[in-house]
Length: 243
Ligand code: NAP
Image (cartoon, rainbow, N blue to C red; front, top):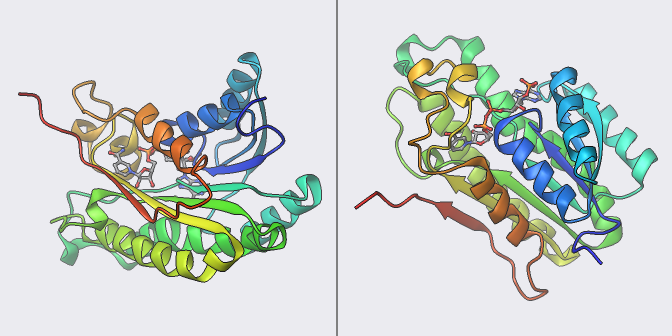
């Protein structure tokens, strides 16, 4: 029997990069994975790739900055699946390379609304299913930028420092329901993140970056199969340098 058989995992930002790798990993472990992002075509492609590998996935397009849409998403998952065993809050945008005094209020809001308010809305929508089941895993994909200063990336850093604070606080709140809430805080990962986040082409895919999306997926897989005694609140992924 697969480790996550008959479980439902919800992964945000599953259209590409880390989220797609996490979704594939969890599907490979037997979970049905609900894929969430805005781009339906890319989500359908990931769903088809999962199905080709013998896994099970479905697509729910949603803009996580839209509170009403996230609430509706939660109702839809509750109606269709009646459970949510794993929530991975992975969707995120960056805004690097810009001094704070040049950042517009709209840019600030987009970063904070996606990276911090989005996970809040998702937890608010799905935690009741986990509380009812008295079990579950919530994993927030943070960043080393949430543990360190990030000059010319203050909005992004603030969102990830905030996400860590949300994680540790909710971890304490939900512990009594046997729900484990953790943050994974990686360094640079080889994805298209920079291209979509305004960091410029130099920060996009680069095979020399030490972390691959699959590395993050492996950590998520470990977290969702923790022993009953473990309540890990944070995993830092600081790649070692080549000798
Ligand atoms: P990516 O390749 O740019 O993917 C981001 C995902 O988030 C996409 O699926 C995107 O899909 C989705 N998304 C963005 N805004 C959204 C919104 N408003 N509503 C719904 N979905 C939204 O980024 P990645 O590198 O995989 O990053 C994943 C996570 O890892 C992020 O939280 C990031 O902060 C974190 N991280 C990344 C790095 C890195 O170097 N790449 C390092 C540390 C931490 P749509 O555009 O279709 O919505």
